[in-house]
Image (cartoon, rainbow, N blue to C red; front, side):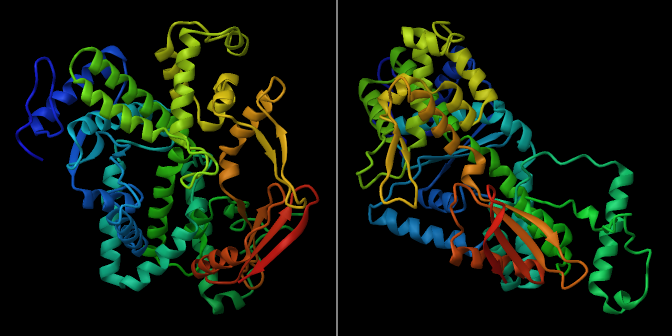
Length: 509
């Protein structure tokens, strides 16, 4: 940072250097546009200026500067730093935390135009989305998330000091391997006080019987009463199988875990739950932020608050962010969520302001309504990526982005093009693209389905295959070994074909 930034006539600044005074002026001007003109609704903003090394450290810890310590974050830091030093990889310009106040981290190496772009993008675009989208309102508590991560960091450090780093690492390694199965996909039933006491009693009984071999040799016909049909009831039913949140199941029912190990699993469950909405709204979240920074920077320029050179710099950075590399480009990594999200936001803006006959036929409710911001705010609030694409992806954008549908059957030597962007194919292409953003398409469907409480306590999990795709053997065995480490007994995983209901694969640890 330097202290010689000077403002030209009517401009907030000239050149690239900045001071905290300039930064405050830019923030105030952006806030006037974002809140006063666009009517965005945001948490209170807190802007933190950090160095490039701190930025590397932050996004090596899955974008959370307050994250607890784990060797995998250090490994990620070393890799990112090496790529950055050799010029093979750039740095994120910003990191933003869904909290109240909303904390946006900006790099001190950024030019003042980049600081303006980042503030518009993160402090107002992402911030508005975090505060208003229904998934974030349902699954995260912005008021307490910072306290939780601070607690998690301190708790992990305390465990390392008390029980040893190797012991803590063993639990975290296993928990991280299972982190995609540490989420409650549906709100849990709220238990009454009586039900909570009954469940606690059943769990205590289960733990006691699991540890004490002598106790298990005593005849006790009342310990596990049976229904008329001979099925066991009581503490077995309290397991509530099947259970898709595998880490939650282990946290509550793994017989050999200590209390501190269960608390570590609880930390990983709550961390995974925090990131769950972000996983489902990547396209919308980045699209909202890109739309916000693009139009805010344009308004700053229209109002004569930034010079032409700054606008050109902003447009250059914006173009890089929303670029969609071709499939044969070395940079290609699938559909760029920034490109698709911003493209859809701009397309909705166009449909609201300048609809074609095709738009009027496809989107009669919003075509020509003259209220793009109101339409977008409704979408940002009420949809996730899957439903957003299914509702708003237009034939116009399908043509612009050259989307078509492939049928990839692993049993055949060729890939067939099923649909192209024509009148017949638009709905099928849109439906297929939306389905690829569904949460069940991103995560494997694996659930805890059985526990052999009468015998050797083997834990059985069931994987439901999708599109006939089998599990990768080496990876499945690695994850199962972590799971067995936490469970303390044998673990079995079966993969079934839902159409034939036959077992296609079976793994044992």
